[in-house]
Image 1 (cartoon, rainbow, N blue to C red):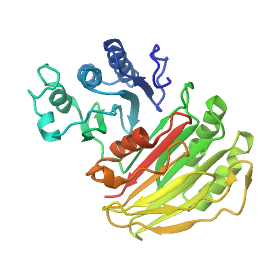
Image 2: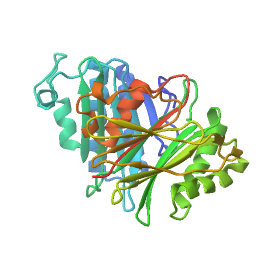
Image 3: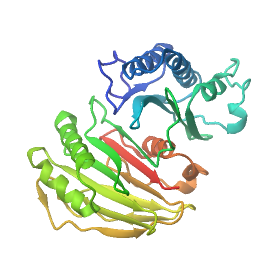
Image 4: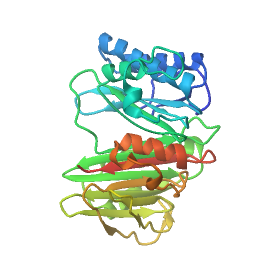
Length: 343
């Protein structure tokens, strides 16, 4: 679903999720129905579906009543043993001047009872948010059917160019034989053919045997020969060595941030995976304790400054990714971003 459009929810919601632009009560109802339908497809218990419905209604209702340019992503989240539903609400204002106070029942800026955020907290399995006055809020909520999975070490978001229903960008993370690796892939062009190239890259990335990033990129290059081709990069976070190992082809941006906002860019080689390349090279970069790795396609401009977002780098990867997509993602291109942190 293109962000900004309000259409019927497709049969079989994809794990990439469905974006809704939430500006009216009718759209808020569509968000709730989409969340319920996805939960049913995932065979979640009826009680959890009812609780998810409350969460979806409150999140969408808050955007209608309070937000500017509010959007919600509804998508599945999975671990080996179970699947849940994740809702990510993103808006561009007005933001919360006092987040702890806003989370308390009884607080309202719209003449209502002010129980929305409190209700969300009570029904959610996991939640996180970041909000700044004048900038807006990113709220991430997960509802799981049973025991809460471990906190994810990486999370990403993609969004199609305005006017398209699928994104040609894709992101993925995997942990194989002790290697924790990230992928960002930007299929050439837009639409279905670009998306097909990126989906193939994700499939091969997930199935390829554990190997250093340069070898994984080489495998992806060979696998994409029958597709339109793509820019892509693979990063490996090695906490024991204190390093990020990085290899890429084409215009993918990778950056390592330290805990105080210092940054170090990572290098991709010129080329198109699947069609043309120079020798694939792998580079090592220091990974400081608590450091964060952010990778994105050229649909996200490399101009955001963590210093302008107090506290953001302490939040979850989902919240960081949502903030970057909101403030640095363009509407004139597919956009994809992934964020990772090893605790």
